[in-house]
Length: 162
Image (cartoon, rainbow, N blue to C red):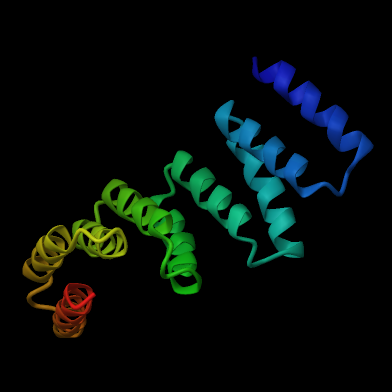
């Protein structure tokens, strides 16, 4: 299955070597077939040419996650969260990777952002409260979460007025 897909995509790349969708697909095939190092080499090379490319960064984080480099994958996703803060998919992926990395507070914070973006405000509040309980001794993080809870209340009030 993967051999056939690889053969087909290589034929397409041979005829159109600059077609990004073909190169992206080749990396997806590598990831799916377990050729993680090949996929990461290709992603790294493409990111040198286009460092802020969203699909490439998602593939990069996915490759790192599959290679069990969870903290590195989370760092890539945190970068995406800063550049695409209103993309629920990025927050969802970050929550998943944080869980695999054992960063439970990070799971709750990322889930909260995801729930805010999809309008599940009660769930967001629960996640922020859980994160706050875990980070009680971290003054800076506690302050950030308290502010986010105030932001959430303002968002809810704004939605209720619509």
